[in-house]
Length: 176
Image (cartoon, rainbow, N blue to C red):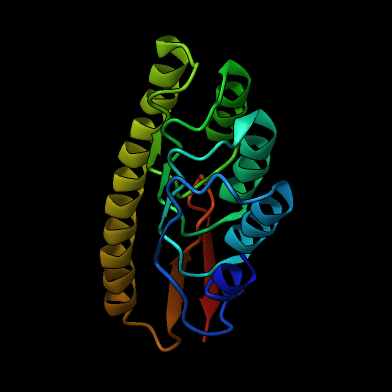
């Protein structure tokens, strides 16, 4: 596991794995999974994590939920057949409902998790994709407006209006 975690360097350190598959590895210890969760939380490039068919259980899944919430890049997590229950699903549901995450797909099939909880998580992840698409459209519109705002100012001093990333798109005005 030390070697694998070395392939997931912290933010900006060096290039690392974009996809990691550790399917069906029953010999990995709790300590090993903990090290992996920490490495995933700080990895600057990992996009896909496949841990299907490992005996993870709810405790390790909880650690992974924290890692996923911390990651700015992880988009797909496969936890199929990992011994999870509704307890783990509830933690992932809480994470998706209350914290911004890059995750777009969470695979929970072949676990002892109710279909209702799986559907709730899936629905929330789908909503996140729609919101991101709307934000991207809004940013493109703001960039077009920013160009117009700068080019339409014909006075002696130049005024630049900038849209911030805040929810209400606050405008800051700076004279040059």
